[in-house]
Length: 293
Image 1 (cartoon, rainbow, N blue to C red):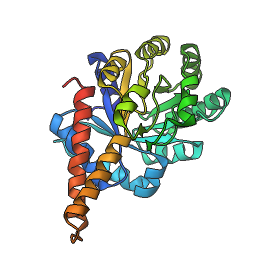
Image 2 (image 1 turned 90 degrees about the vertical axis):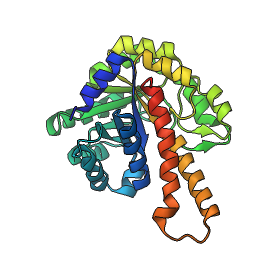
Image 3 (image 1 turned 135 degrees about the vertical axis):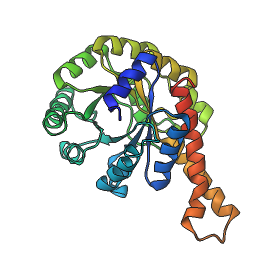
Image 4 (image 1 turned 30 degrees about the vertical axis):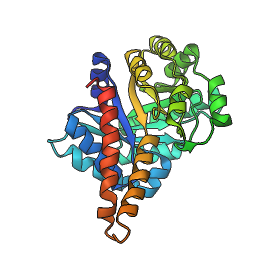
């Protein structure tokens, strides 16, 4: 099977991006892998610290390994999303994940560099094939449905990643991937149309950072973004796009409807089946967008 590094290089050459989708349970897992198989494109399954604690680190690794062993599926990879300590990074590096992002955005610039570099050095010794992602700037932390933008999003507007800082960050840490703040933020607003206008992703800033660093860029907080802006950002250097909140919303709405329509049902797999279908639909739409299908 192709490595994640190889798939990213191919995506960049084609001016497309790999979809990254967070999961919290087996329903999300099947939604991602079935969507990827239907379209025959690679995908990344992401698990945050909270999601890993819920599913289990070895358990989610084993799930993804079963798909990797099945040659009927396209390449599926496993990423440890937003990881906030060196120790938690070591845990997933030792477990054999394909990638991890150390999120040091709440640290000082110097401390972010120091800890990210430490993670990179450990990974190079323990698991050289593993990709290490760093984050610079501020894009918020929680994938949720918001009533208002909130002070953290307003702060993100003032903390966009500067190309000169990105270059220094990449050079001093040795990371493989960079997640910049380019007007993106986690979560969506209750009104999806308002969300699309609020997420002011700046493709021109993406291009500047890409040119300065020569490093594949990752767009976090992709849920609710304008399709045209995402396409332009991919053309300008985004290699991976993260989607989480829209999947969670599809899950919640489908489960709610399933229970309303079948109030006497007690079989979990029957209650949850519509949620798998709903999430898969969202994921397929995103994969088509990211891959120009």
